[in-house]
Length: 114
Image (tube, rainbow, N blue to C red; front, side):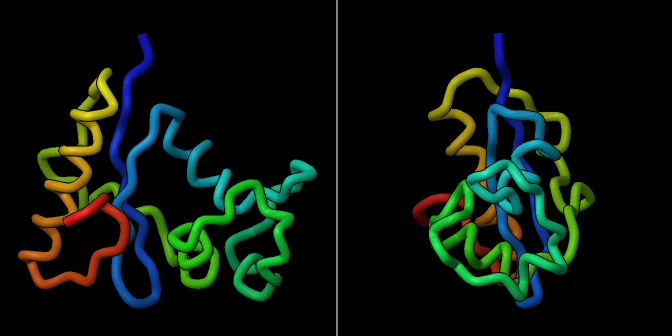
């Protein structure tokens, strides 16, 4: 049975909270993958155009490509070892983590509707 995980990415101006049923590193790499399968470095992706040739093109993914600094598993806190099978539970945990980080004074992107 597949399990979902949360992840936190540091951006130039805050943090992005996300969730995935993929391996977390694979999901993060997807943000920097072109439709032809080419994996672009985060540094190179900052300067590349949003030309419709990226694997993913949502506004939050564009923000990640523009301002990615690092993966931050240390920001997961009690959610670090969380493994959930149901999408609804995973999305709820994602929102809770985003709200927790916001209460700590951080600027947070992603994390679902709040």
